[in-house]
Length: 147
Image 1 (cartoon, rainbow, N blue to C red):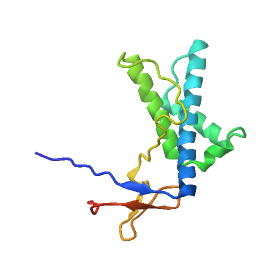
Image 2 (tube, rainbow, N blue to C red; image 1 turned 120 degrees about the horizontal axis):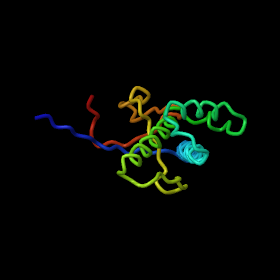
Image 3 (cartoon, rainbow, N blue to C red; image 1 turned 30 degrees about the horizontal axis):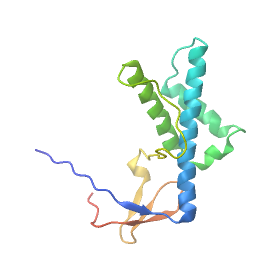
Image 4 (cartoon, rainbow, N blue to C red; image 1 turned 60 degrees about the vertical axis):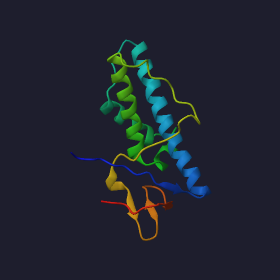
């Protein structure tokens, strides 16, 4: 029998890093809400559901557009993952497992994920972690990392 075990570690960001993390979470929330609004507008126009791949093309246009140039400051993988979360919410809605997806509000559950573990670099000797588009973050750990 195989045992799967997980550990949680705490990041200790300074003020500037906290602002960047909040900005990244806000960008993910904005992308989620904008994609949800686009989905609702297409549904009201009588069009079909827009899949993840088409939404990712919209994300590229939003990042390169003149209205939202600040989206380029955020890493692209968490923004893409926000679109995947919306796609999963719609799939669950169509399967009648949950209610219709809702818009996200600021402050309630602000978070984002880096889905690719290759992007995260650990420096155990200095107790630092490197995330894309951020400087090295200090972290506290009670035990060494395995693997």
